[in-house]
Image 1 (cartoon, rainbow, N blue to C red):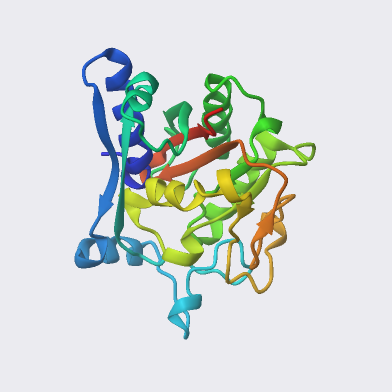
Image 2: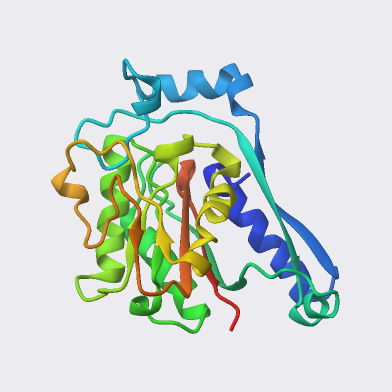
Length: 253
């Protein structure tokens, strides 16, 4: 029921069950088999939101001036969530700590996102993680490659991070794998977790000409960027119907 924010919301729901003491361990994330569903393609096509490009590998191009829509894809990513003491007791490999989250609703439009509510969602997730915006080192953007959606998210990102977050880098995974719908958020988080160890931010690819409306400071384009540190990742997911869910994952110190 959370549309393209379902992966993040599943992640959060698992954490909430742990906090409530309802479970000792949660398997949480998202799985999508969208490519086999005609209705998915029909719905996006009716909104004129499906990407078109003579070279399929270049069709998904968030932030590019000539982007023209979504590349529907499929996949899945499931995380094991548990309390720290239990993970340490069984000597689990710990990839990160879910430090904060927020979910809200735009309550304004069935399709067009609301950057004000997106910004509020990011701010609250950061606050609940006990951090400030400048302490977020990597932002995994939701940007799907639609002309309006990418700009709205960039507006929200500027509102939250401004021009002073010099150590905050922005990237996008959909440019590589397309939009995995309900699985998108957790797959994209999985793609960014290695940055905690190697301090490499993977880029947004297929950007031949950056849309000026999407020009963010430290937007990593086309080539990976080696950075000084990655201690906190903010993971955006913004679904149709105005469903927003943002998570903050930190390196376990």
